[in-house]
Picture 1 (cartoon, rainbow, N blue to C red):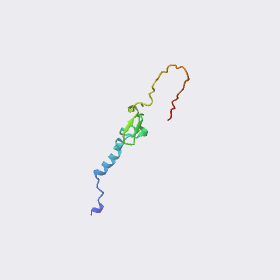
Picture 2: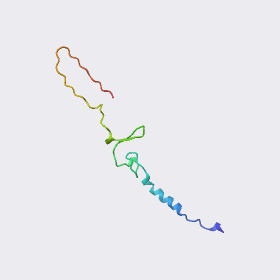
Picture 3: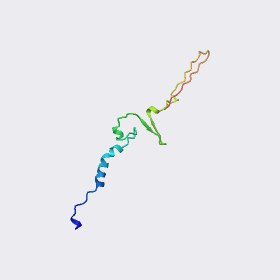
Picture 4: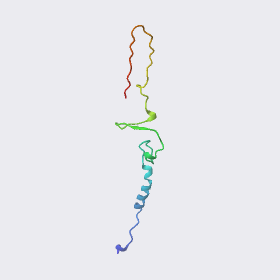
Length: 91
């Protein structure tokens, strides 16, 4: 008469329940790569840039652009016709 026996309690089922609650620590934030939270809950406000090749660059790691550096030149007065050259900046 095995039909009337109550179902056996298996510890594997209770283990699955506790694993579900511990999954919060398995979450990974894509902004700071920290564990335990989503990016919307991230306390780290650092900007992260994901490149097409898979590299990650943060705002503080970025190198200053060499294009933005301006070179100064002091022009001496010239007699005769003067020509003015303008540099056009485009985005």
